Length: 330
Length: 217
Image: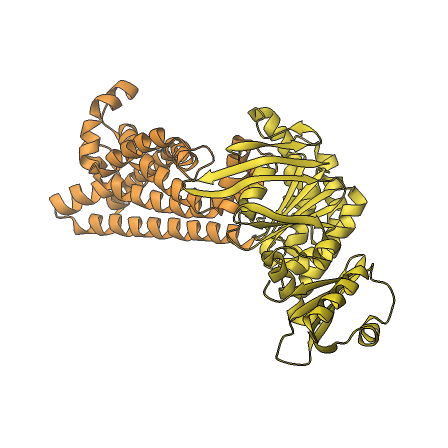
């Protein structure tokens, strides 16, 4: 289902947690919302998932305004939403299977149908043999799988993931993301992922919106944002994922220029062409590649020495060949 | 010896009767009040600050009454309810009313300890407040509630010792009248031993039940 946010605003005491956020989330996709802690992510997802009402603005699900519904309709509407959390929030008084049964129980599904659906959902998340397991006997990854099964038991149209992988180790994170991607396709879900981890956005999301101090500072396709980040916040997020694993450094120094090679960059020996065409010298300090779901983005940190005039010609030529150039400390 | 056995036997039955029914009524009155205290507080599922603080004050006032005085204050009420204000049955009323606020506070505390994230999840799934209470909050808090009720029962055993004031009988009354006032140490010792066994048995059963619930989690 399509989600539309219109000028959302929410203030707690004196803090404006969400400040004039407007966003269009297309249906049948995985949409990431990234921000540092305190950026207003949690508040935003609480407004989107109808747990709280905004002070100003509106939330639309598939064109229908849902933020101001009367109680009965609000409850009915929440039953069409799935949500998973950082701390899983499973009911410890219930077994894995009974957790999955809960959302079905509360809307009066017949017992036989609940049983069938629980088995089906546990199978979908790969835990068919743990139906009677107490929650405390499950690992973190298994808990999140149960939470996913529970969130999707009523076949909702939307799944909100509030920092769903933040409490998991990297391998488990990958397997949970793979599961969410797989289920998203199977059930045609609109998935909204709230996170502070850029690798989650990179590995799972098609679109991303960057939140800072309650405001959206940047949004678009993940591959475009990775190739051409416009704000410092976004660049910092991208730098974090790269520096961790994928950048290979030759030197402790950093060059003045960052080059981004995207899928559109022509298959030409760009570096040697520059050396031949222009009177400049290249020094490569670091390089790396980032694997996005449907495209790889290459990065290179270089220094270009030569006359200012030649350098600006080089940059122009690079941009014309779909290599994005960004100067350090701009 | 035989006489001691009869005296202790009858008194034990009276104590059990008083404690059983007053626990039952204390739970019937106190448990819903505890749920109300939890759900209407500022972090509860349906905050009602004014109502909450009024209820809270009333409960505190009731809890601060010494039991002996509460019994006397409630005399007219007991007479109105049962037609008499003395005897074993009549003491059940002040005992219940003394224990109910305690049960309310214990229930409230147990519910307050339920992870707010779990309640948020239940709400996000479209639970009604009523469903959150009986399908989430209460089951999640059950082990703490049970251990709190164990405490209540033990408190009631000691309160019931004062029931002699209203002619309620029971083990405490027996120990005072025969052991203290008539110097029959044997009767007193027997009464005290039965009380000790009773308290130990209830504590044992309560702990076991709590642990059994926790072990399934």
